[in-house]
Image (cartoon, rainbow, N blue to C red):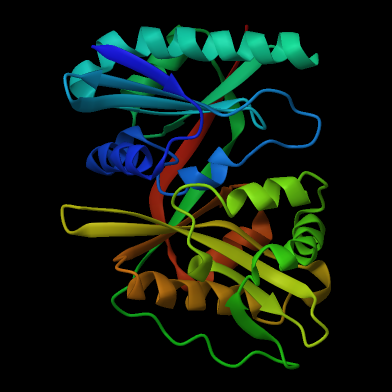
Length: 300
């Protein structure tokens, strides 16, 4: 078995990673929307995205992605190779956590997530000192064979793709307001336009007549596997001044229409179990998938 480390994977490498995850969905938490995480690097955070690929001959049997902005490592492992790979993955993640802490004065800690039905991963993480966190991610899903039309928006608002780099400042303002956070910035949003897997036609905003971005959703398209092709929303937000006007529902439905046209059979979205408004919105147009993701952290 060989391991190769690189930065942001290219289109071919990303697709191979997503194909492996699609074969074993219960052993992967962020594969369809992985490109969004490849752009993460919040203000004040040091380090770079790092990707590790493990091959058995020519076959990709495992991968891990270190995202410096969140110190979270996304992992997918072929079940037949888990016993050999996990010690290497844990050592690799620990090394990156320590290096980032040494370089930027940040806590020497890192995160790994696991679906609640992935009992083997949960047992392994806890046996290696990872602590289970109280919050969870709830996943929603919709079969795209029957999606209602989005309907007309009020006050001259319209759903359309982002107008490229020129509209990034307007997007950033809306994102910060929607999440009450300053994490998003122009540089981060610029990187999203360049990551593998990004499609301009799936980067949607709701625009006001005066040019403001008042809602947004970026969509990511995964590979086909066993007749199923998933598209995922990440992120989705509505400016506080424009909430409760149906904008979130409208952009979700328009996004589903576009995903179906692009070949997706199912749409996914996830949110924290503590986000009441987001759970209500997603539950109004999608069904809870019955899958929750548990998050684990470890100081090193």
